[in-house]
Length: 336
Image (cartoon, rainbow, N blue to C red; front, side, top):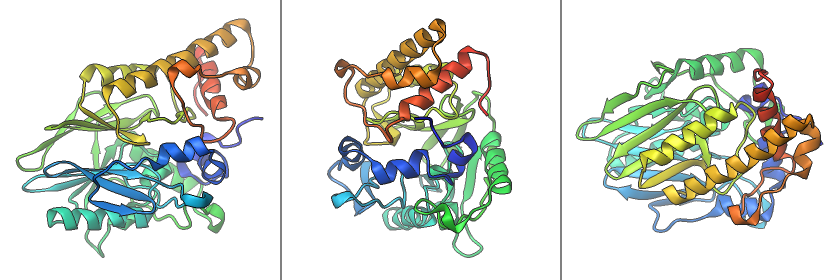
């Protein structure tokens, strides 16, 4: 079996490949990983819940898999709300405008104000496709992202416009580009919300341009898709050595709470186990390349040892993306 979802298709979420296929055919383990319900929560829908982490700080966790086997991809990725005296920042555009509208209204309910800022961790459609849901007529928040993320969103819109057949993930897509662009370098941007600062740190790993969002009290970081908790990550746009370096840095920075791009909130211990799993994949992929074994032949033989925990798979051939990414990098090739 070969993966059928191209890089461009994935960040537009317009193919029947990686995510759409996964949502329709997720295993019981995958559904369990997405369905973890961390009590107590301040809001709950069938497709997401929000929990308070501290005064003025909430995480939003997506739960797309429904009891009985159905799927509701309203949010799909995780998010969050961070409030100061002068501004309210929310994290991610989610998969659909309905998901973003939910977080916008929740911010108003919890803080008394609509979001003033939205931060995108990266350009993939399950994190950016719902930006229109933050608009309130002519009003809307500043959309913060890197230059690379903005350019990728614009390219996706021009190259592959939305179609009715894009269901179940995105039925309609409106172009809402970031209007507050930050550097793609490693220099952090600090936003003062009034009595609370938020640090936006550009990184690379899951894509060529990821952002993490962190606060100091409590020490919490939103990792975007640099971290899939209890789920095997998507490698389609990854440079694997950058991913390992980013995860290692996140571990070294020692946050109290890690909010992954997908799956329940986690601790440093869980993130460390994630890195161990990534490195086991690396060893297998390097061995295959050294032996001259093509990724297409190597990945079906790969298994994660039980000692490294249980890692749900979005789809049966999810490992193929990892082996192809390693093969590409070790052979000095760029992602297509």
